[in-house]
Each structure stands twice: as structure tokens, then as C-alpha cells.
Length: 431
Ligand SMILES: *Cc1c(COP(=O)(O)O)cnc(C)c1O
Image 1 (cartoon, rainbow, N blue to C red):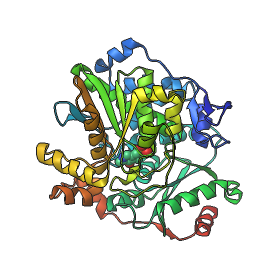
Image 2 (cartoon, protein in one colour):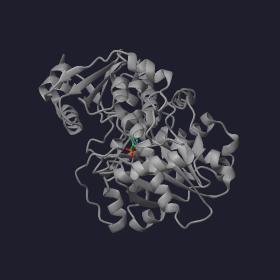
Image 3 (cartoon, helix red, strand yellow):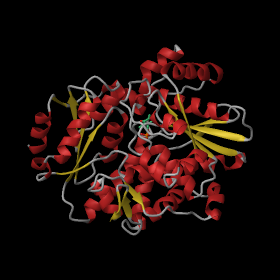
């Protein structure tokens, strides 16, 4: 499979180059030259196939022959080494739990697959050592650190804003050591992001170190997210209802992978983009005019994005036709008080504890299903509620049980470098 740049269709790339570079030279996102159509017989048979086989069939053509089948299967097995259950919340709404991985959020899937792919290309070729440089507002850092831990030939440097990530998130970033370095920036997420972008353009650094990013613009992080839509449909097949997925969205990588899976043949009737107060896409779907805005902070902070970078991929999937997109996608936006109310209500009615991101997804599917019959709606529970302990415990008025692995993590010693300027970062990268 070749990938083209969404800024310039005549620029194409191999899978390997797209993974190593992240972005095209013109800063465009890479997009596969064709959407793979899977045979109806395969889709019908999902129930009888195992995880590995399903994921292999789904991604195989996007990787092509650049990773041999046996290595690709190893990467998939490592990526999907946990469960993806759909849990019934009401008769017609379920929660697709994506938090059973090592860092308790769905980003584990993309991060692990990318680490496996990049690790393979390094082992095989003459790429030399690569530094993965990322800024995180919380979940990305932990997932990337965990996914790349111990992968040979790769150093990971993660910038996070001091005092702005949750305790669990911070421990997930700062306690791993080996090839992972956590840098605590005296500033906010945007400062971290700005430093990372500047480093990528700084030839003093790029002459000495090969840098790559690991956010969801990378095809090796974006594409494998389709796996859990296949695994969900496998579980939902027997319901014999029209299927709707509601995805708590920030940068729109996750939902875009789901919409790709639908184009590939999954029997999904409709998608809901569930947004918090960062409502750029909700507004776009209402007005057909795209207007980015500065992000505003919310309790579902992994979705605090005012100009979602993957939305151009969603548009591309529908040939940039607003009317076709509208048939497949609805968007709703909910503020923090609605989110808290949903967490509280679902907990008191069913005993199920949602995290703030999942709760926005729940609200989205509930809204879409109003007055409709014959549907089953699934919202993606993108993180474990324990990652947002303060909010969740305050809302439900009860302590949330903490697993032993989290207790163990919290006992580990934090190790980070403290920096306050770009020069500090540069000094570190050149040392
Ligand atoms: C990253 C993240 C999101 C947003 O996902 P996108 O792919 O950026 O839309 C939602 N929920 C949680 C918990 C996340 O970590």
C-alpha cells in the first residue's frame, strides 16, 4: 500500500517511510491510496474468528509486504494482549471498554502497534537510533512510554506540563526508566507542544538525532485503532440491531479509524462524535463551516482540542462531501455539568462507573437514540475511571476501588528532568 499526503496527492510514501517520518515533507497527513474492502463472508464470520486473525485481515493490506506476516502477527499479538469487552449498560446501550491495557486507556493499542512496527523497521534496516519526542497532556505519554519501553534502537523523550497531569498519569510516565526519559516542563501543555515542534525544525538537533513523533497523526498509531471496532462488532453480531458507535473525540484519530472500518465493510449504521465544550466539529456538522478555536479546559481533558488534527482524514474518507459525511456522522457537545450528571445517574441506576470521557460518549449515544427503535448504541469507554479519580469520586460520592497494579505503581519513585525553557530541552537533546 502507498500513502499520499493530504496536502499534495502526487507525493506518495511507503508504509515504512510514513511510520518513520510521521508527517509528509509538506506537513500533510498520510492517507492510504485505497480503502481496503473486506469480503462480506469475512465480516459475517467475525463471531467465529479469533482476535489475531481478525486484526491481521483488517490491517494486512495497509502494511503490504513491508512487514512479513509472521512478524506482523507477533506485533498484533502484543498489541491486543488484553480484553475489549462490550458491557451492557441498558437494554440498548453498551460500553466498549478500552481500558484493560497497561496504561488503562485506549491509546495503548495504537502506541503498542507503532512501537512494534518502528521496532521492526529499526531491527531490519539501517535507520540507526531514533528518538521519539512527544508532548502529552496526559494519556499519550503513558501509552507511548509503555509501548516503547525496552524497544531496541529507540529513545523516548516525553514532555509533560508540571502539575497538570493526574497522579496516576504522572507515575505512568516517570517510573519506567530504561529508554524512557520524562521531562517536566514549567508551563502548560501548549508550551510542551511548542517546544516539541521547534525541536523538529531545529537543524542543530536534527543533524545529531533522528527525531520522530508518536501522536495519532502517525499511520501506525491511527490505523490499528480500527481493531476494536471489529472486535466490538464480533460481540454485537447476534444482537441483530442497527449498530451505532459514539466516540469521545479530541483529535479525531479514534473515530476516524472506526469510520475507516465501516468503509471497509463493518455493519455500522452511524457514528456519533461526542465532544465536550470543545465543539469545533459539532459546529461544523451543524453549519458546514469549519472554524477552529482555542481549546478550553474541561474534566474530560484528553478531548480538549480546538482544531482536531485528524479531522482532515475524516473529510477525505467522504471525498470532502459534507452531505455524505452528515449521513454517517452526527456530532453533539456536552459541558462538564452534563458530564458529571451522566456519571452520577448511570452510577445510581446501574452501578456502572464511567470516566468523564466515556460519559461524554454515553451522552452522545443517548442523544442520538432518542425516539429511535431497533438500534444498539455502543459508546467507547476510552479510559478507566481510576485515571480521573478526583472527579469520579467527587461525583459518585464514593471511593473507587484501586487495583494492586495501580497501588504498586503509586509506590514507585518518580524520576523526571525539570526544564523551563526551550534551551534546556535543546541542551538535553544535544548532550
Ligand atoms: C486521547 C483520548 C481521547 C481522544 O481521542 P482522539 O483519538 O484524539 O479523538 C478520548 N478519551 C481519552 C481517555 C483519551 O486518552
